[in-house]
Image (cartoon, rainbow, N blue to C red; front, side, top):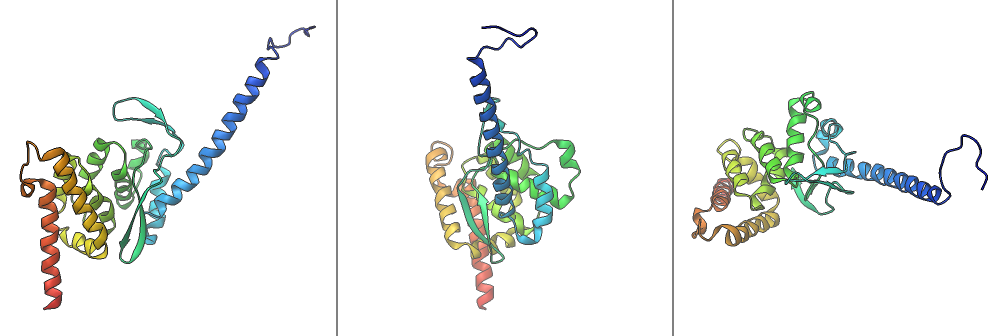
Length: 242
């Protein structure tokens, strides 16, 4: 083979590999771009329509273009779909919302997060309550302890059906006299989901905490929170009937 002076030293075998690699990168870029649009729509659909402008601002700081995700153990793993396909359907003020089961994107740039309004920060904290990392969920819940806004309830309530006791301890501080009415309203709107959550809480107690820490269900913090909501719901219903 005659090589022209100054031409790149690339064999014919390497050229197809370069083309294939470029084609693959292009396909991945298209796929990630499509996923980003779907992911944005899923997050928008998980909040009331009246909050859509603020939800859009919160979405802008999410690192949806980062698919190399930091795991709880410090490892980096590439994730194609940053939002799990499973959803929890709930009613909030008679409006149907679709709450993602799990989210896998990294946390946002702190400098960008600081620029959000208080309500946008609250929305962002709600979003991260569905994060795959329990430490992130707990940290974000800490920021919502004193929040009484009804729209956070589908996100905080979902934590009641999970097994991380440290998160339940924070939730216990949040569900107090100032916020209890929002939970009563929520369970009255979502009775089947309420029953499923209570059953899930009992299952996790039996699997992880019954032996040796809490042999009696009534001593488990998840049960105490459920009973608090249940008691207040019964009282409120009796007041309506009176």
